[in-house]
Image (tube, rainbow, N blue to C red):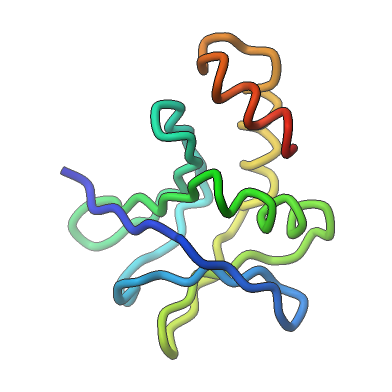
Amino acid sequence: MKSRISILKTNITDNKLLLEADVPIDGLNPSGQILVDSDKYSFIYIMEDPEDYTYIVLPEPIWTSIKTAYDQKLPVWMIKNDQEIELINFHDELEFVISNIKGNSNYGHEMVTKVESIF
C-alpha cells in the first residue's frame, strides 16, 4: 500500500503556499503529477521515494488556499520542520485535472459540484 500524507494546514507566506505535513518528508521527490480521489474529495500529489510512491492528500478543506495560490501563481511547497520540497508542475497539473472534472459526471456529482464551487 502506498504511503499517504494528509495536508490539513496551509499558510501563504513569502509569496508561496506552504503545505504543512505532519510527518517527516525527507527522501521524497516531487513527480509533478496530480491525481483525483473523488471518493474522498481530494487531489493527490504524487511524490517518489527510493522504494515506492507517497501520496500527498490535498482534501477539500484546504482547496481555498490552493485556489488562492493558483490564482496568484504562487509556488507550492510542502514543509515539515526545517524540511521544504517544492511541488513542481503543481499549477499545470491542477489546471489539467480541474478542466477534466468540470461538468464530467465520471467523477461523481458531489466531486464535480465541490470543484466547480471553488475553482
